[in-house]
Length: 112
Length: 111
Image 1 (spheres, chains in turn orange, yellow):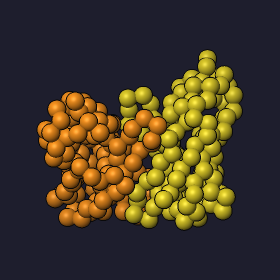
Image 2: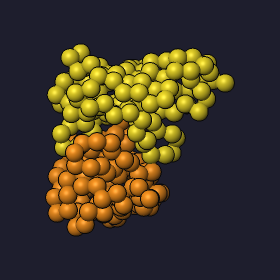
Image 3: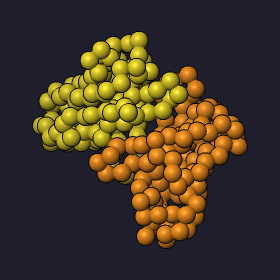
Image 4: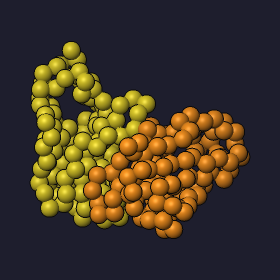
């Protein structure tokens, strides 16, 4: 059982480049989400999904797109990277009935 | 806007000491409250989940309590060990499963 798997673990982008952070879970969880963690600010919710075909915005959605075509995968797309998007990104998943949330190992993104 | 505050921001204790980490939140209409552990360069590991109808949960040397009326939760760690050194995060959970996090308490247990 792999749990929540994120790739890549480290990435350096130039301003204006695009990229996709991948997230996959093998626990058949309905709920998946993306958070970013910045020093002194805690984790903040970017986007979330309560099932395939359903996505919604979190606290800090600007500059990010998501889609949920399957239960297992929830990619996060940066269309035009900005230095303000330098952060650590965490994907999370859980059952829809509000129990324990499981996190991936994180993706460290630097935009120069 | 929901706010979650954790005090202290950092704590250093000698091995074997009992300690309490504090978490306060402004929105009493929470669904659940979770405590997480984060090791440097790693993801978050769930330690304890307290559902809104519960007042506390225990796992081994860890005990977490929840007082919704006062907007507070505490994490009690008994007989601390160097392996407990990590950052501890509390987060309250909405009905949609979304989590609102505090900024964490960085714990160092000195051998």
